[in-house]
Image (tube, rainbow, N blue to C red; front, side, top):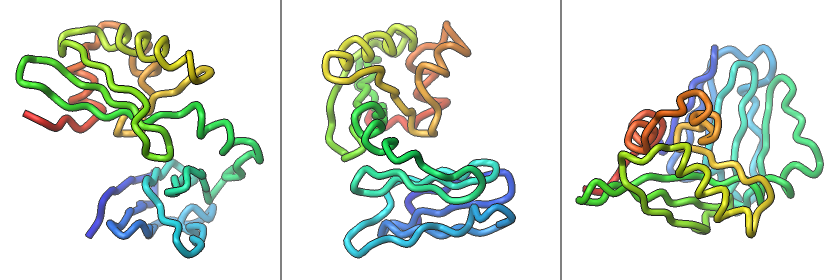
Length: 172
């Protein structure tokens, strides 16, 4: 079975539930030539772009293939401490829980807010709470968009709007 799918311009990447990935479609730039995994390592997320594929491994390392896919030597060290994956869940009382996980899968922050709160305010609160431990953190929504980019594009977006458009909302 498959856990995630990501479609690029002319190629698609599928993440299998066992942590392996497959890619198919146009391969002019090598975007379907997925890096081989060492034993005991699996993929946890995949993202297909226009000419490249980026994959997140279970050990927190980012690998890529395709056009301009070289990962700078210090990138993985920087990313591990600066990038968080966000997830949303609803409570019965119109409250949304925003949970942020490090690339190692460990939850680093949980924030409760009203669904009608502005997403940019929540983004600022997350940044303030995270800046004590992280420098300039980036929060990635479940669909791969950055929370601060979404907030700049639509300053009046509420948490409900952002969670419905850019994330999977679980719970009640």
